Length: 124
Image (cartoon, rainbow, N blue to C red):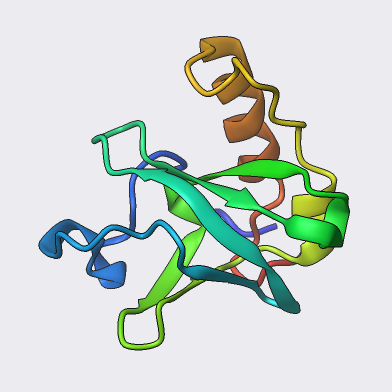
């Protein structure tokens, strides 16, 4: 694992998200090894940004929260978001329940989980 200074809850400047006002809802989401679903909700809150991805049939309709820091790039013309995690890493993430979006302990678990899976190439 590298010593990359990863910021879980803020989008990378290189994504262009802070400079644009378009809503990411409905954008396709691509992991490093394939499609994982579409964005169901997104927030740009400073220090608390995330996207919620509806995985559809891929993992039985489960929704997952991805911290803003996992977003590697946005294809604005293609309406797609690329994240730097594998499908398996996302599948193994803490399950998102109905009331957990605003639960600080859930967000802590998610941030810790994704922070521990980062090596800059989407590998464990």
